[in-house]
Length: 389
Ligand code: HMG
Image 1 (cartoon, rainbow, N blue to C red):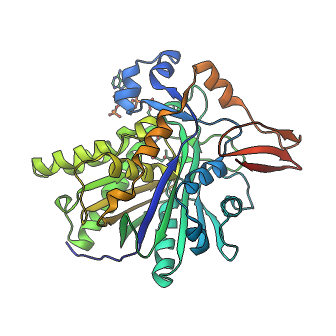
Image 2 (tube, rainbow, N blue to C red; image 1 turned 180 degrees about the vertical axis):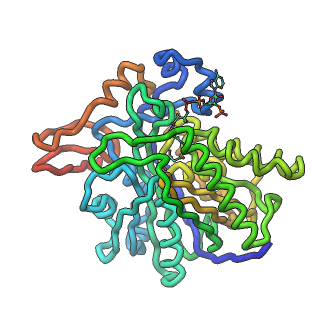
Image 3 (tube, rainbow, N blue to C red; image 1 turned 90 degrees about the vertical axis):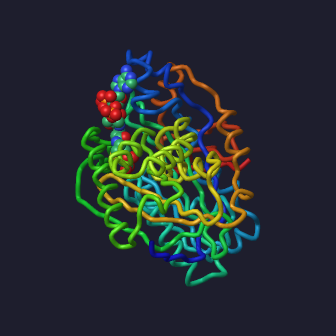
């Protein structure tokens, strides 16, 4: 396999999920479905639910706050927020995130969109910027709320949360190997016209487009790089629900030696531990899976190559790779991440449904109370005012 490695990569990495969840057994019973369909057929055990006082901006700042030191805030020249749950058609959420986090003022802040894919474009942009300016850093945040509607076909694949990644020229966790293969296809598998509250989705079709997109970018990656599954220590997938990546990987592994199949499937399981407990994060799903893999696999060492499959409906798909840096394990946040997941409050189905239906009314000035580190404190003059505890 060709080696195209740069030193630029992910220096710090953290996720945030809202403080509430639904147990998938409870949801299955309420929807008159066999719980095994959700736990095994879909592969989800819990689903994140957000209160009205939390949005993509509070998710983003709560994730980034965990990793940024005062020195980082002085070194960040660009804040990229990837989302498909935008709270404004004009002003970028990244501008608000930049302000709340106290990033130095002479920075660029933008929001990027292409369904669940955009954070991957953000990472590439960050990589190239830091390669040109090795003393500077870029903050990339993937943040979303996945909502399909109560009792909808997509309901068991909802979720929400954010992943923050700090990109630097001397990364402590992963070097990004600038070997990305992207694929754009104009397809309507999942879309949300402006003003529509929930996405339109052709669920079964979206599964097959995802599977086919993985096959295409993987084959092209192998052709360009003379690569093989055996070159990879693990492959992390965009994870709208945890069965999805498996459905794309298994057919491609069929002709591989048994040892390669077993190893990659065991690593796949490590990569979905957290996702099983959160559901879809849209832009953040691939990166939550990456964190899950790094923090739960016992079969990773420095120098190992990890493949990443990014997919956004509409569609753009991308396969790229990263290499683990010596000492990477010392920079993970397993204890904090597990504590965050374990401290969440389980909602009854009635409480979930009423939280789901709550909406912000921008025509009335309103005050809210939420004890989280970041929350919406007030709606005033048609905009959101945030509170930082
Ligand atoms: P559905 O109709 O509820 O479920 O749709 P199903 O009938 O297809 O069953 C799902 C699986 O459960 C099947 O397994 C069944 O056999 C199994 P599979 O054939 O897939 O391997 N099953 C059971 N297993 C054990 N015990 C049982 C049992 N019963 C059935 N008793 C669907 C499921 C995912 C389509 C739906 O929830 C949906 O539309 N979700 C949203 C769309 C989605 O997530 N698509 C994924 C690909 S597109 C993507 O990833 C992009 C996205 O993230 C958006 C973006 O880019 O912005 C979504």
